[in-house]
Image (cartoon, rainbow, N blue to C red):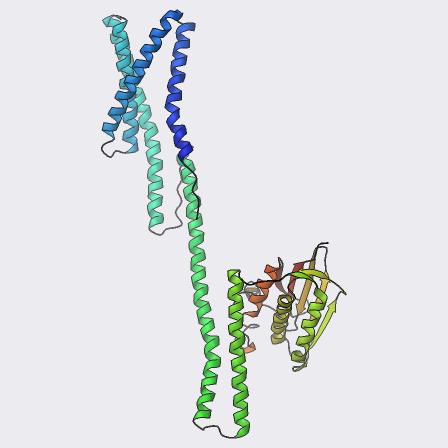
Length: 417
C-alpha cells in the first residue's frame, strides 16, 4: 500500500494564516497611530475596538458574499476577479464609514472615493492578469491530463508560472514518465509471457509427439523385432527424462523469480565444489572426446550453498559442451581476487554473436547460430545460473575469447574473516 502524505498540517497552516495576517495588520495600524499620528494611549482602545469591529463585520460580509457567488460553478479567473472586487468594495465601504464618523467634507470625501475607485479598478485589472496566467497553467494541465487519459503517455506540460502550479506540472510530467515506463515494462512482460508460453509449448510438444508416435507404433504392432523395441523404449525413456528435467528447471526458475527458493549458505571451499562438479561432468564430455581442463587455486573460501554453485558450474559446462566441437577442450579456471572469487568456463565453439550476448541469460532464448535448437537444451540453464549467482550477491557475464570460443565468467564474494 502506498501511503499518501498527510494534508492536515497544510490545512491547519492555511486556516491560521488569515488570523495571523489580521493580528499583524491590527498591530501595525496601532503602531502607526502611536508613532506617526501621535495618538494618545487612552484613545488607542477606541481605535482598536473600531478596527476589530470593522474587520469582523467586513469578514462576515465578505464571507457571506463569497459563499453566495460560489454557489454556482465559476472559473478560477472569475473567482480571482470576484475576490479582488470584493476586497476593494469592502475597503471603500470601510473608508466611507470612517469618513462619515470623522466628518470629512463632501469635497474631500469625493476625491477620496474617486482615488479609491481608481485603485480598485487597478487591483481588479492586476488580478485579471494574474488570473489569466493561472487559468492558462490550469488549462495546460487539464489538456495534458486528458491526453494521458486517452492513452498518450508521451504528453508533457510546460508551465512557467514559477509557483505551486509549476511544481504541479513538474510532478505531472514525472508521473507520466513513470506511467510510460510502467506501460513499457508491462508490454515487455506481456511479450515475454507470450514467448515463454510458445517456447514451453514447443519444448513440451516435441518429446510428447515423439513418445506418442513410438507408443502408437508399438501398440499397433508396426515394430515387433526386439532390437527396435528396445531402442524405442530407450528413446522414450530419454524423452521422459528430458521432460522431467524441463519441468524441474521451470519449477526452479519460478522459485528464483518469486524469491522463494531456499538457500542454506555456509562457508565452504569453492575450489573443492567446482572440482567435484567438473569431475562429475568429465564422463559426459568424454563420450564426445571432449576433455575438461581445470585450473584452480588450492583453497578459496566463500559463503555459498554448495549444491547451487555446483548447479551453476554444471549448467555452464553443459552449455559449453553443446557448442564445443568433438575432440576439443573446455577450460575451467577459478581464482581469488581481493574481494571476489572469479570462475571462468570457456568453450571452443563459434563464440557468441554481439546481438545474442545481451540475451543469452534470458529464459528460452536461442540465438540464430550458437544457441539454435539443433544443439538441444531448453534455454533455461543459463537463466537459472544467473538467478543463483545473483542470489549469492554475485554477477555473471559472457564474452568472446580473443582466440575463439565463448567465455562465461561469474564472480561471488569471498568470505570475510
